[in-house]
Image (tube, rainbow, N blue to C red; front, side, top):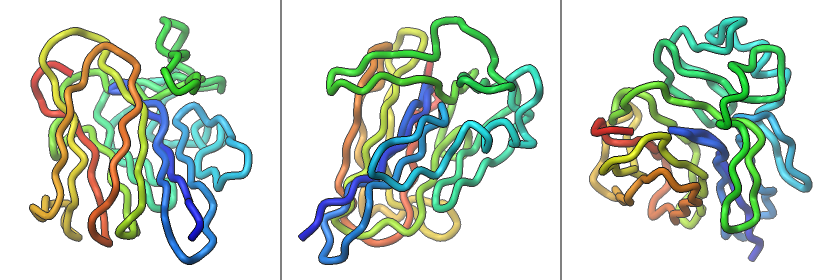
Length: 196
């Protein structure tokens, strides 16, 4: 059996999302890095050029709101969210571009949710996940308070199925989150609408 990883980098701050798969088929690690950074020996789904060309990001680096779709990953944004990356629509350098994570990953850009999230607001949706895939993502909040992040199986309408909904604390600490999908289908990653 061959391990495959899918990564997502975003920022609630979300930096990177990845999916690792244990499968009889040979699959590469899939990476969605919201800084546009390309990983070696992986299938990269977001480039700096993709972010530069995104219609829902203004020249000032602020999102107008809506969805960004990169293959099997959809990022649901809201107005005034921000893009931090080394490209022409970078919001700026307020210290949100680079964070060190304990596993050695150093982010170089991210999606910044400029407000509270929720199940239907400011989320990531990953489709075509296979049972046994490991989805990893890096996240943190920029403020303090009691916030939680969800990794939940959803149906074709984006509603939770109840099969899997794993919840973890989300704090102002750079952290990697990893989950093994228990079923084939789609999964949503979102923060509750408390403080994050």
